[in-house]
Each structure stands twice: as structure tokens, then as C-alpha cells.
Image (tube, rainbow, N blue to C red; front, side, top):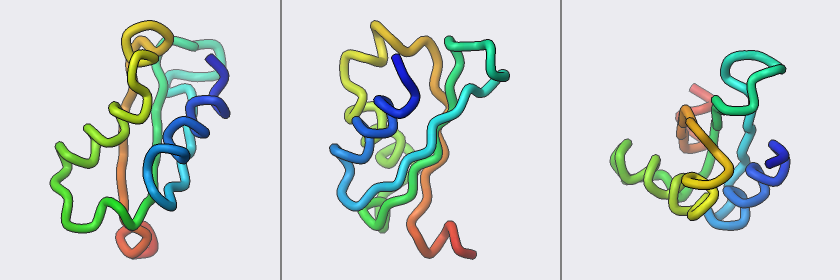
Length: 81
């Protein structure tokens, strides 16, 4: 699955999200990905709930196309600070 496709799925599902997805272990490793997601929708959400929002956005891709995903989530204010 292309990294830009993963970013698009996240951005379509989480309001006003900006997602950046990279290969966590280097350019040749397609199995371990890392996502940084910034959205005002994360305000007042727990870390677990934020991560669940990202996993929900990826739905069945988490069990078929994506082996492992490291997730970092921020509100815009947290990202700026």
C-alpha cells in the first residue's frame, strides 16, 4: 500500500487532519510504518482514543496491508509547542 494512500485514508476519516506516513525502519522496509497525525479533533481525547481514531481510519488495512504502525498524535497547539 502506498504511503500517500495511507495518509489519505487518515485525512479523510479524521476531521481537519494532516497525516505524514513514513517507513519507520528505513526506505526498504514496507512492513513497519510510522504515522504522525495532527488534528484539532484530538483535543480532549485520551492518547488511547487518539490512536484508536487512527486505527479506525485504516480499518481492514491494519490486518491486510499494514504489518505494524507507530502512531504519534497531536493537536495543532501541541505540535506548535
